[in-house]
Length: 216
Ligand code: ADP
Ligand code: ADP
Ligand code: ZN
Image (tube, rainbow, N blue to C red; front, side, top):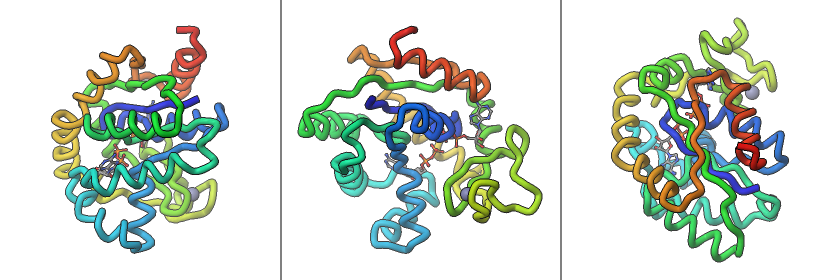
């Protein structure tokens, strides 16, 4: 199963990708997580990506596309993958077509998770994340333990610096200008499936599962 999850920042792509990865037994590939990991390890990739993440802009395609190409060429992607946060502009969508053509495999579906801006803003404002394993929490929907340690791995739970209000405004602008055209790109190809991301996370998951299993 080869899936792309599309949608505005904070809509729940990561939340669904983790669950889908478990249910379908294929890796979850999040470019955002890859960049954050590289930044925390201070690798050359992290050093070049940091300023873009901090300001809410897209990391340049020369960096991002090669990273995804390498990742998708790994043996663990042979059975499939869940792409979360890529493609984020039309050039990346075209590059993904090329990469998959080179690997000789098709995309099964693009799941567009949609929600109003007010919902998305509240989700981002309350989002907390584990520095070690990436587990997601939300101050009201799924509060982190009081001691601030991840229930899964005891890692430190923090708030992303790009989740502060002014950077969120920039990310939403970038989403509208650069990522929304990707929705039309896939709609035009007939592989786009839209799910209401305002529902609770379990409901969203079941809807996606029935969509990819051809029952919706
Ligand atoms: P969110 O889950 O809130 O949408 P992500 O974790 O996917 O955020 O991305 C965080 C940041 O990482 C983006 O604002 C951008 O700077 C960078 N990034 C992630 N994926 C890509 C991509 N495909 N192309 C360019 N930059 C990216
Ligand atoms: P994205 O990857 O699209 O940026 P996340 O999966 O990180 O979004 O979710 C953003 C925040 O919203 C997280 O704090 C997460 O716990 C919460 N969240 C995700 N999906 C839902 C949902 N369906 N209902 C309520 N809260 C949610
Ligand atoms: Zn953790």
